Image (tube, rainbow, N blue to C red; front, side, top):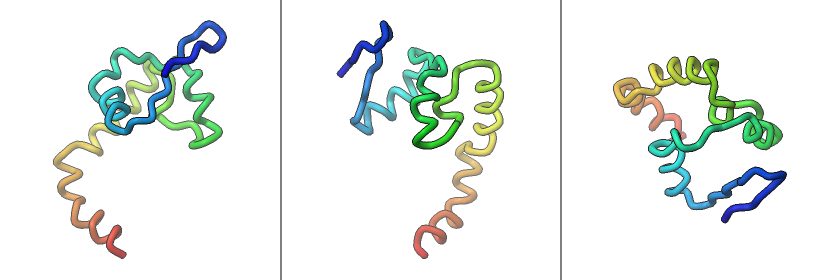
Length: 86
């Protein structure tokens, strides 16, 4: 579904699988211009996920990717599991 708002085209996606694909493999086609951040700020605050794609965003993402890489996630898996099972 696409809505035209103030001359811009917004695409609202509710399917989790499509959202995952858009945010992980097709994200180079989605340039976040700051409007998305403003829309979601009321719901989740200012987060890197919805932030404008600029040099600050790239730097933050680079640092986060070092933390959330596969090796670190596998290392912490037992801790995550123990917390969830409480």
